Image (tube, rainbow, N blue to C red):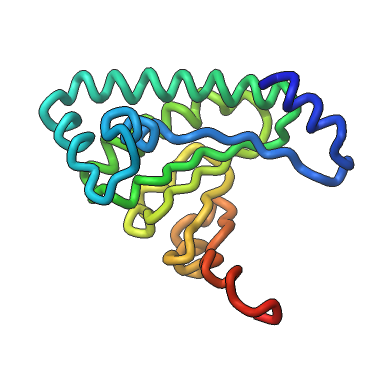
Length: 175
């Protein structure tokens, strides 16, 4: 990984940013427990509720591992980092607080000393905007279902990015 990032970083023009990324603890735990993507995330939710201490420990382990992974990416040339919480939108507010946002905060806090912008992308998480006010990151990435104006008002200390429906890219060029 280090050699690849260093090679990419040195071959890019100076105005091109290299963004490191990783999966968020909840998203990674979902893949680990489910064995694949899921529509309902029944297995991982059941595990989290039947074995809360074990699940919280898993979230901490994944947060620490991803912090080390991001640290290596920054040391190798990444100028910003993004944490993808691809499946946080499958959680209601109460579950999201404990199962996804708690370990995501741990991860983002662990890389605060790196001095690069931290981006948190809670896919499908428009219902969580109020919970993100104190998220330890500089930028919140938004999916196309989240209104940019509302998000900007609710997250005044964060930059917001994203919001393009990927389906638009399949439309006519002039759109």
